[in-house]
Length: 270
Image (cartoon, rainbow, N blue to C red; front, side, top):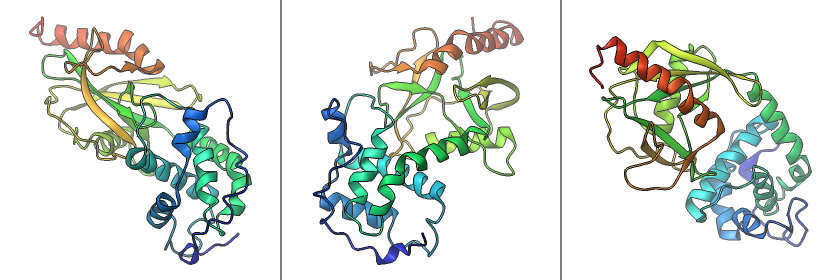
């Protein structure tokens, strides 16, 4: 379907239809995905209106745009403290699309759309950076808007034509607003398998200044901070814990790298 989105008319006549993705057991989560008429007009104008003709012919582009719009919706229109099921973005999209005649036909396609997006991303290499402070006692971590009390290391999918280290530097800057290029160790990295069985690579960076950072993508990243490599706690007392893969890195690769750096520098950090 070739849709020219600049001609979308926001209407409410679809809103009486039952949303097929509403979960009766998750009322609190359902409220996060609700969209008022005013919110819908803002979101549609920011992300869907006035795109060039044919821009959304690809369901992958449309699915990614929905995710971007959802992160924006959470950061601007909603307050929450709990992690939420990934399926909630489907409920959000269905609620949003009911305001728009041209997008309403896509509602039944949403599950297949997001499945295609996940499959497309599985084959791409994930690259990130583990940033340590000058005395190797703290590491920089981020929390995503969708999981505000769970932290991870900055990372993302490599772009076409990038080397792994270039991808790690770019993704770290995109998520933390910090250019790590002068601190990164191109020869100190490790590979790992992600839960989707795709490949991932993390590079280490040292002597990274402990400056206060604000997310470059506030609609996607809600917090950037430093945690102790032993206690995994922040100095400011903010309560967050590592996700599963990050916890394993804290247990294995991170202490091994720190120990190697101490030996390399004649134990100056001990």
